[in-house]
Length: 128
Image 1 (cartoon, rainbow, N blue to C red):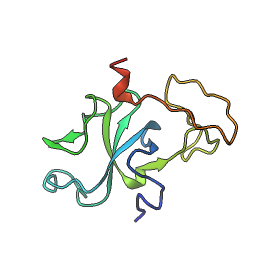
Image 2: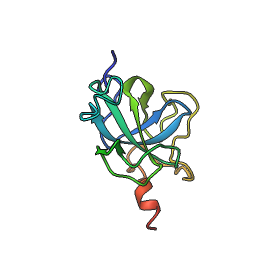
Image 3: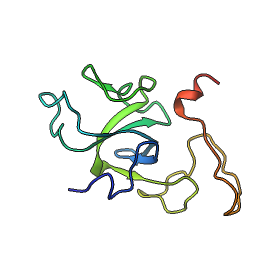
Image 4: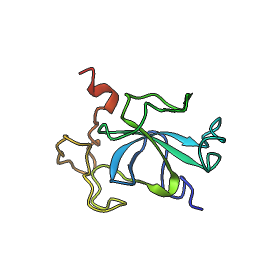
């Protein structure tokens, strides 16, 4: 069984979730404790993701148990094997031809010594 560490996944990192190549930010890594009686394989390693677009199923909670917080419809939980890390700006994206920036963002040319551009989190989109 593959682990989040082996795939380069970390909280705060960018990722692509299957199905449907959904881009987002990792908000949670771990077992879905408290859901053992409702979710198959709940005690295995899961990835809680805040998606860039409202293509999720929740707000960071499942069956009344909160694992992270985001806007409703932007949260999703997937098993580690259904998720790949990616670094914005890199040509090689783990699961095919995915955008290297969050949806709606333009890429910026930069030299190796210039800092990487920062992108607003999906949560900050609503406020500004």
